[in-house]
Each structure stands twice: as structure tokens, then as C-alpha cells.
Image (tube, rainbow, N blue to C red):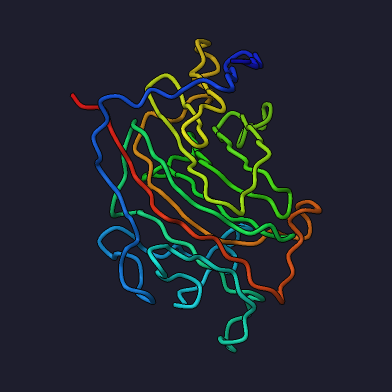
Length: 263
């Protein structure tokens, strides 16, 4: 089997490497098997809140942008023709486990598919449960950019995101994202393994340089929660993320599962 390794001071990529899935215990899951038209399980999920970032600027609590259908969670971005008092040009759907479930170290997998329309910007990702302005961290299990036909998996830390030293660690894999795929993360105290369909696509490692650690190279020793969303991009981001505000974007999530190692 052919392996491709890309080296830097704190990372390497091993395409084709099998992930270790032994001795895992399921600690959280949602199969989205509620009746058609229902909302996600409120013991597990809440709607994300609208703020000013590109991904959450048009978030809505409308039942038309988040619902269950045929055993799937459906998240959509739709033209805003139903909420006349809302200035948002589109309404987008997003849910998260904030305040309901978080975990530190383990494995998460999500099976999903999306469309390949220009402007499409869905994601399955993770954020820290507690905000620390000196320790920015974000794990993008997967996100898609417009009609590229590829899956992006990205690690954001304080060093790259806030201090702007280098670029976020990222891998981009050409893939038919219109079809079902399983995207995952295996998270240890020393490494973050990103996977697609059970195969490791990249590995981000904790630095051995004390200075880099102090500046926020590794900000992942704390609980994170889960987010699933369908958003659209912005004309100022890149050509792939210029949205058509008159069309419908849709991503479906078949299930999401979190495991931790047996003691």
C-alpha cells in the first residue's frame, strides 16, 4: 500500500493508514430515527445562535431549516420568504450539543452527504465547552466549500488563528460529497487523527517545543461539544463560496456517534 508523508515541525500525513478502533465504548449517539417532520432530540441538541460570523449570520429557529426525515437529520439554507421581519437574506439551520454533551479525548464519526452547489458551506465540527480567550481551538471534522467536490478537514489552534503564525493544519480530499461518507476524528492527549470512511487522512501532533505550546499550538486538552450545520458562504471568501440566495442548499446527516476508550 502506498503511503504519502508530509512533514512539518508538528504534523505528518499518512494516507492509507488504518485507524485503531479497538476497545471503544459508545458514550453518545443520535441515529435521527424520530418520526418525519419532528425536531432533533432536545435532550441532546439545541439550535445554534445567530451571531456575525459567515456560518452563523443567518441562523434561524424555523422548522423549515432543521427537521427529521426518513431517519436523517436535514439541515437546509433557504431563501427568506417566510420571515418578513427578519433582515437575513437566507435562513440556515444548525444544531449543537452545547450544554447537553461534551467530551475530552475519544472518537467521533458522522455519516453525511451534501450537495455541490456554488456557495454551499456545511460542516460537522467541534468547539470548546468553555471559552478561553488565550486558548482558541476548533476541530473541523469535515466541511465542504461550494461545488469543489472535496472534503476539507481542518485543525484551528490559538497559534495560527489568533496569533496568525502559520496556517491552520488542513487536508483536502477529492470526494463525491453527494454520496454518503463517514467522516471522523480520533483524539488522544498527543494527537488528532482525521479519518474518512475509516481511513486516516491526516495526523496533527502536539508539539514538543515548549514555546509553541505556550503560544497555543495545542489547545485540545479540554472538553469540546459537537456542531452540525448547513450554511452558505460569502462573496468575499472565494469563488466557490459565493451563494445563490434564491436557491435551497441541503445537507443530510444519517447518524453521529462518539466513543471513548474502555478504562
